[in-house]
Length: 261
Image 1 (tube, helix red, strand yellow):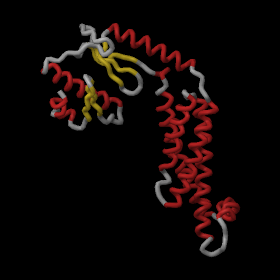
Image 2 (image 1 turned 45 degrees about the vertical axis):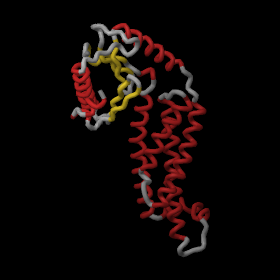
Image 3 (image 1 turned 30 degrees about the horizontal axis):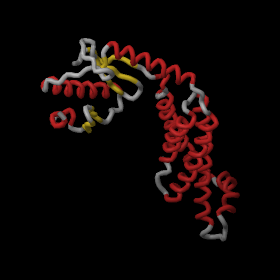
Image 4 (image 1 turned 180 degrees about the vertical axis):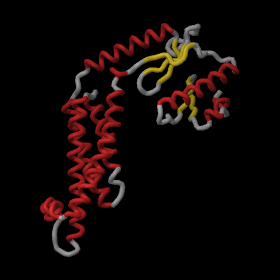
């Protein structure tokens, strides 16, 4: 069956693996949801056609029942699809409601989550300064900060809320400002040490005054802050929506297409 599927034009770029009686088809999800649904429908039609040509039939994925009520069901926020009978669909819906209730009543471990974000912020500051010293990829640090912060917070706090997301943003903005300032202080140190015998700490102490009093340096510093801030805001919005909407309380179950088998 695997060899038959691999020869299909619609599955040329898909990864097909098998384990026991389970066949997994992995493919890159298009950016637009409508395109993803079109791609999914193409794959489903291709697979079902091959299954029918080879006289293969399947029952529901939960208990194996094969009746006229079989349909494709989409569950959750990550495009998980199942073949379910009406009775299995009802059971899955009840299980999902229990998960939603459990998620709503779950206590958010705010302190532990914020400590994790602070740790990520410190790593981000170091990474930004090092990237600045190397002269490359500073723009990637805000993206890293937002993605890792939400991942770590959700893992430690067990859930995420709008208030905690706001606190995360404040912490990330502060850490990014500190990182940008330290990176500029290092630039100033490299310039001053060519003409004077100074230490980094001496330059760091005078860096705020130097940046504010030199129009050219102040302009470039402000520009970098705005660019970093813009990347941070964009990354934050994307990461927050992804993390927040992936909570079990927002999970949905719906039939994609009835009687496909």
